[in-house]
Every structure is written in C-alpha cells, then in structure tokens.
Image 1 (spheres, rainbow, N blue to C red):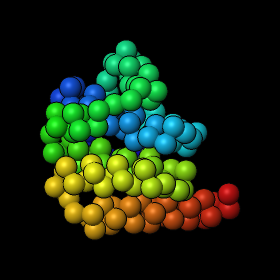
Image 2: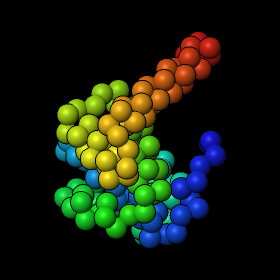
Image 3: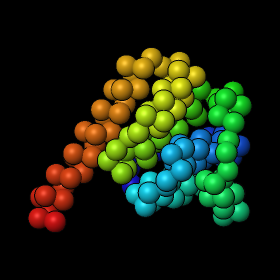
Image 4: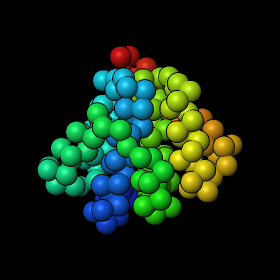
Length: 140
C-alpha cells in the first residue's frame, strides 16, 4: 500500500471523512462492486474501530446532509476525501452527472476551482492507465 496520511487525522475527522465517502459512493443509489471494494479499502486506512466502520457501512443507505457534513470538516480532511472520492467514483470507470456535481461542490467548499477538480479526475484516469500497464506487463 502506498503511503497515506488519513490515519494521522483525529478519529472524529476520520469518521467524517468516511461519511463523505459513503455519501459519494451511494449518491447514484448504485454502489458498484468496484466502488464498494474501494470504500472498504479506505475504511481500513482510517484505522477506526470495527464498530465505527460498521456505522459507516450502514450509512451507505442513509441520506446525508452534505452541506452540514462539509461545514463540520476541516479543509484538509475535505481535500483528502475529495481525492479519494474521485478515485472511488471512477472505480467503475464512469462518472455520472450527479457524482460530478457532488465532487465539484466538495471541491468548492475545499476552496478549489472546478478546473482543479477536473485535474484531479484526470490524475485518477492517468493512475488507472498506469495500473493497467502493470497488468499488461504481467500478461494478465
């Protein structure tokens, strides 16, 4: 696993980070297997207790007040969640309008321009191409 800094946040911020990812994963009411795998991987990175991770799993089926959540989060947490939300959203290799609108809203709250969010999404696509080239090198 690559080095990350999510586990360095305080537990309440890590939980809010997970809530934002859960909201993004379920925004289109269709959590794909790839999105769920990514969500679970990020839950592991939070180092939250099993009970708190279960609460986050359960929040996949609950409507969340996005504005309220974002207003309770630190800018650094929002940016990390945005990065991972972009990765998770594109895990199924597609992004729908509702998902993109939410990403843009999250970016705006974090102080980013829409161009920066688009650059982040481009970075994700580049990363997926990089990963695919590893499979090709292994003839998989």
